[in-house]
Length: 249
Image (cartoon, rainbow, N blue to C red; front, side, top):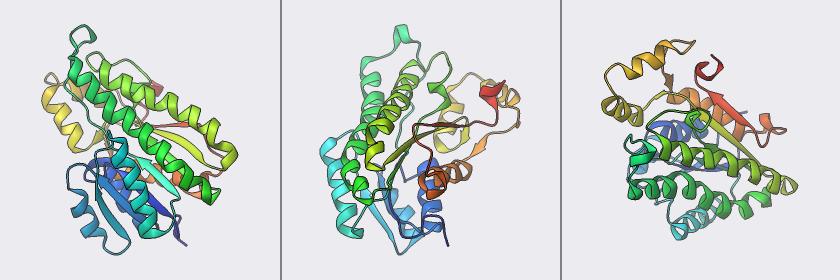
């Protein structure tokens, strides 16, 4: 039997990158998937997936839209078992001393408050199953310093801290909360980083990565399936780093 057979999952950021890969993999593993994104590209994701996939256009920084997303998922599929928060923006590189206020506010609104909103809104429905799972996508930049990415790192670090707290608070209801911290993954976001970074910067990171390459979005999706499924039933409050060994050096 597929590992998510019979489960209903919301995946935010499902229009591209890791979010799209997660939505595709969850569906392949038997889940009914609510694919949410602000771009409208979630419709293309669901068109590929076919039956058992519902596209919803949503801005996760808006609490009301997030609450409507959860309600729509339950209305369509009758329950909610899994929430995977992939929606994120990267912002432009800037030192903390020069970081624009508007960019900082947007990074926090999407990357942190978006996860907070969805976690809060989904919890009552996840608790009804007695075995719900929340998988929040952060970043290795939440774990070590990358000059020029203070705002982004802060938003992802907040996701890690909040997730650990939620794991403790939700445990008695049977809801698990874990974090996946990807390293450099070959996605549209990474391509934008490549264009904005100094020449050769990405090559230096890859050279310092023991596995010697960028990660793939489908590899992150496989990690998310493990955390979402009953295979990780005794795992909560954990941070899974998937970075080719970069942080181990």
